[in-house]
Image 1 (cartoon, one colour):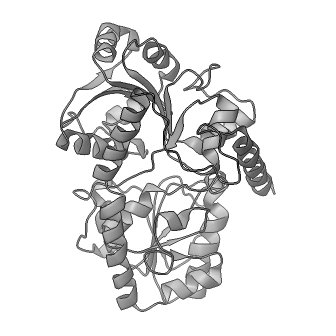
Image 2: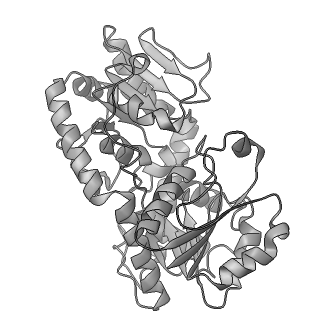
Length: 394
């Protein structure tokens, strides 16, 4: 199967989660005999931090203006089995026009930022990678988030056929690694600063740091400044290149994952960090969201904390127990959440859609499923987003 993708970036893994996912999928698809061509606009930030120039099976086309490569675009789409646009594609509307004019390719959209897309749609704000037409003309819409988001993509944006395609991990990249002295600690956290994560970060990371002054906590990520409520026992790494992520995870017996409020409101929203840390054999301490237990078993493969007290208890667990939990999490990640598993799922979903067969979609939580989508799911997702927005405002 030949895929043609118009996306944010695959050439630079700095400051975004798109590149890591597409690299893993491209490699897994290549190993199964498929081809993936990726079209990416040459943007200054990613050009300055480019760390990939070729794909394992397919072309990486970096262009300054889509019109300059229009003939190549049309040729690629004409020979493709699947033509896809992703969220945050800087030429999403124009690329979507080319994709939607395809005569033989499956026309697909992959929303890798579903919470942002739905929040903007709910508020009546422009979704610049979609334009006013929304999703109604695509043959298949894939979502990085499942649960209530599926019904909302249908009801708010007109998607006709929706399915989740969650994040994954490339075990050739994320695997057990030697600890690195600057990252040694009792609990680590890797993530860019985000206001919608701050309350939980304070409860589950800074709170334990305050109550356990003899323990060491390590934070890595950009956009933290002097206004952040630092603790004396918190080490900070401002920039952490992706190649160092496995060593960062493996330098602590436990790592924290915090979900953005707008994503948690939708449920079934596993961060790629859950899978990456697990593939490194490091257990994750996570906040709770609906559907988390569909990916890892709480208490056996992952720890869940809803308060500072519960986070402190997790940090104080014996390291031997945490190591056993990490081993079980790694086994689960390699079995169910690898890039190879997601690539097979992607092919299956696209083949089913191309045959115009009814997709075997999971039921929409709290709704009465109808033909794979249900407008009732929109009301549930909208209410959840409203609640999250009110919480942030408060």
